Amino acid sequence: MARYAMALDYKNCINCKACETACKEENGVLLGAQNHRIWVGTKEIEGEFPLLNISSSNFLPSQCQQCSNAPCQEVCPTNATYYDEHGVVRVDSDKCILCSYCMTACPYDARYVDDRTNTVDKCNFCSDTRIARGEITTACQATCPTKVRIFGDLDDPNSEISEVLRTREHFSLKSYLGTDPKLFYLT
Amino acid sequence: MNFKSIIPIKEVSIKELFSFKMSFSNVTMAMITLGLVALFTAGAITYFIEGHHAYNVTREHPWGLIIGMYVFFVVSSTGLCIMSSIGHVFGVKEFEIIGKRAILGAILTICTGFLVIALEIGHPVRMVIYNILTPGFTSAIWWMGTLYGLYLCFIIFEFIFLIRNDHKWSKIFGLGGLLVGIAAHSNLGAVFGFLIARPIANGVFFPIYFILSAMITGSYLLFLMYGFRYKMNFPKEVEDMLVKLAKILGLLLAILMFFEIWRMLTSIYGGVPGRAEIAKHILMSPNFLVGEVLLGMLIPFIIILVSKGKNIKGLVWASILGMVGIFFMRYDLVHDTQLMPLQLLKIREYQLPPSLVEYFPSFAEIAISIGGIGVCLLVYYFAEKFFNLDYDK
Image 1 (cartoon, rainbow over the protein chains, first blue to last red):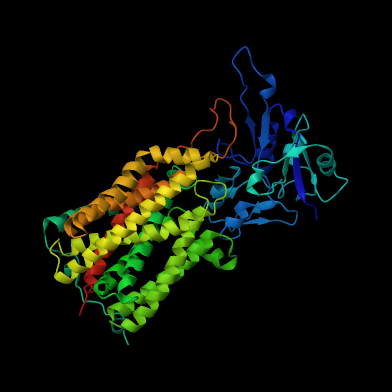
Image 2: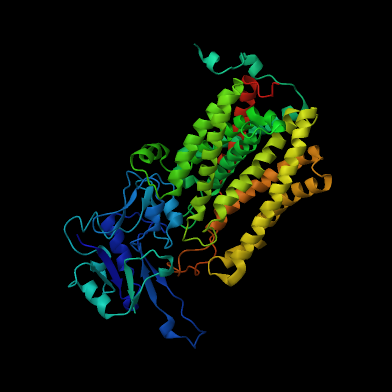
């Protein structure tokens, strides 16, 4: 079985939001400011005009961090949040009781309430759409014009993601919490 | 064998059920109760029409006033259960008179808590099913819910044996209810204490603090129940009990203040990001200063201290303030936990960088939460008609 992860070459991001749009289209995410599985954070440019520090400006695409030690999975009272065979953290909407504990427990604000099922939803690496159809890319990765996103199998030493994590420096968000995310930011 | 031979229940006609002495305090209480029940009904109807959109909870602030109110009710229940066990579980003579009234209060408050939370979580029926089919043993909510279910069974049996005057079995179920109740209630504290994403809540503080504040809540409620029952003209044995209770309450409040001081000091000291700034924010907020500290702790504490616990009438009035303070303790607990934004950067155009999360309850949330008190009072009124809650020697 694969162990899916994503590396983000975030300095290439141009904040075109194609990934957000592709995600919504692929997974049928409803419109609305609160309803988003993935997002792009904007860091404000430092300094005062005209003395701006151009290099301080960057964009940080983010989403569910697919933690190996996921707080949301630990706190779920009905095991609606589970790890699938590919190590992806997923929500079984039939079991979710919408107690919102996972939303409070997730350190990344990655979860939201889906109005179609009235349950909690989040990024699942297109597990029930593209991956289920046998494809090996996610919608956000396939659409990214500047190749920010590298999606693949950590257990396959020849995969692009394994290669890039071997050769490039990277970090993960809030790593001090011990959640062991499978989203890696390349520096 | 019929129902009445199992549970001694008084024969009450419909007319008797709705008639009471038209004194000022009774009529005031009746008006308040009916007003609150109407408010609750309005809130519940709004929720059934609009669903979760009737609430002001958001992605950033998923737990709102109703969660706080649920905690308020179950804190009351556990508190009454613990305080009543002083008498008929641990055998302290003066406290044996509170048994029935306190346990009935514990049953009613936890049922109201369940009612309120059922209107908050999205799928309460599904919860019951999957709580059993696919239990999440690492989840504090699972333990809290399951143990509270068991606790409710224990205290119902305890109450049945109490009104049957079977002190052997009521003691056994009382001990069971006490132990399971403490386990359940500390697990409710752990629901917050286990949140690694929220440094202000994370840690061992809440499970212990919940037990302590429950005992304080139980004491306030006993003052209110007895103050209303005897309209401030207490018989000798009730007065003796309340003076003793006041002294215990004074000690508990002193410990609570001690707890809170160290909690704030450890939160601020060292300036841990996401914890220190929230602690400072809490320290400056009127909810904390006026609600929790002044109403919830200081005023009752000063009354006990000045009168050496003998000013029972003053304490009954102060218990009203105390319960308002306890309400703010629960609301702040839920709200302050979520104050720190988890988003690091702004994620939409024309948005300011993330700052402290704001939340104010909607009409439906306020109506269901505050109205829940009315539901509890109404059922208490009926229960008082059906059962003999006073101590028979």
